[in-house]
Amino acid sequence: MKFPDPHEVKARTIPGTEGWERMYPYQYQFVTDDPVRGRYEKETFWFNDGLHYPEPLYPFDTIWDEAWYLALSQYNNRIFMVPPVRGVDHRVINGYMYISPVPVKDPAEIGKRVPHFMERAGFYFKNWDALEKKWVAKMEATIRELEALKIPTLGEMEELSVVTDAVGESQGYHLLKNYDDLINLGIKCWQYHFEFLNLGYAAYVFFLDFMQKQFPSMPTQRVTQMISGIDVIMYRPDEELKKLAKLAVDSRIDGALTNGGDWGAVEAGLRKDPRAKDWLSALEKSRQPWFNVSTGTGWFHHDRSWNDQMSVPLAGIKTYIEKLRQGVSIERPIEKVRAERDRITAEYRGLLPDDASRKQFDELLGCAKTVFPYVENHLFYVEHWFHSLFWNKVREVGAILARHGVIGEVEDVWLLRRDEIKSALWDVVTAWATGVTPRGTTTWPKEIAWRKGVMQKFKEWSAPPAIGTAPEVIQEPFTIVLWGVTNKSLADWAAVQDHKDPSRMNELKGFAGSPGVVEGKARVCRTVAEVSALQEGEILVAPTTSPSWAPAFAKIKACVTDVGGVMSHAAIVCREYGLPAVVGTGHATKIIQSGMKVRVDGSTGVITLVR
Image (cartoon, rainbow, N blue to C red):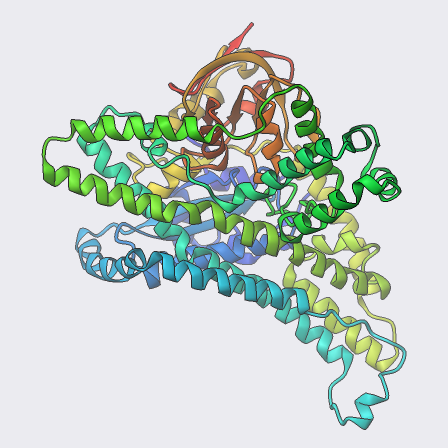
């Protein structure tokens, strides 16, 4: 398998974007002027992290990539001492993120790391429930701290109390300090994010490794089915929509919700209807905290929360009301999923050769079931609740920069790196203190206008799924189960890449994410805004999916994604809904078009384009 040289890809600059590198941290650049680093980059395998970033990153939005670059790597390499892998290295080309796990190559060093990992990870596995309770308390405290953080404005004159109370500090100082506090809360949040996450995946990987050694031909999804049917809070926002739909039907106000246009008009009508009093009260209870779920993955500033865009949850409520009117169940088929889970578990346990292996099976499966909820639950606290509040706090910072003429409008703030914003705030604060015009009023507007054009060109660029030198064997477990990158998937991606006319291909291959075979019309949805176009019984084709898309799973027959492995969100949710899924295809959204008839085989990972 041959993939493009990363330096050659970077060298093919998109016309009009020359100099784009200044939009991102310098350590993210592929280099040619450093022979040692350049050789390392060329000989390393890098894959496009489309799981998290299906579109190019705005300069400020890089903050979460920086945060997990640090957090994941430190927990692997400095805290838990994961034996075979250190951290994950990162690079950027045209706004798209490329990552590469850094292995521990020396067998002797791996051996030295094992006892440390067993001691440290073992402590967490043995005390998981108690430690997870502490984690929830820490995260909720961090969220409350974020909510309480004030972004000061700069008035004509400080309050008299600054003098009479001998405060000794100005609003300008607090603006600078609180911006730092805002950024540091974001970084701290991501420190907590990875405290448990890698161990959660590790428990699954340990169980997977045991089962594949016992049953070499067993499909990976059989292992995932053994830990399915577990309730997690990431399903709670969707469950709240179902409750509100049922209450609307019971209260006979469902017509106002389904026929009322946008949320503003619907809400105005409901407030005039005495029958809607209890429903509106229930809505307010649901909104905090459950409507802090993002309309996307939460990784991008434009992924507004349900609370910010009430039309999104309203669309979900409408979907469920229509199903209730038709007498269709809107519940997840959890009992059916659990029955299948228990059947598969008993079948494979019964095939084990002796008591020792059955004991190990029970221990590993029990551990995986204990830790698995965190793998989904952390998403709500971090990528959704915290991120939704964080983005809006940054918008308050943007409003100050716009008020002082440094940027044209609030949403321009995302075109600056986080360190550039700090410099711009210093410019604003010192100019305010002195009574002069900030220098940024003549420097940033031109740069931002140019960056807007660059971002548009980035969005039109087709990022290769992988670059660099493919390894002989991909063994890093998280790369396999989360991103869906294996030697087989690389070969499948390369086959599409090498095809003379991919648009005429009749078959695509990916991971068998959730079992079953269905045929139907495809609906390509790249954003949550496009999900509203989904029709009943269609097959969702997306770069990736996020929890806010949950109502879509009540409509679709199957799901296909460009990125992700057996532990990706799409695969997990489809297993819970009993829907076939093929994930990690690499190219599905580029080849499949809405309206095409496709056959999805979630048991083999094959998608057939029925022409």
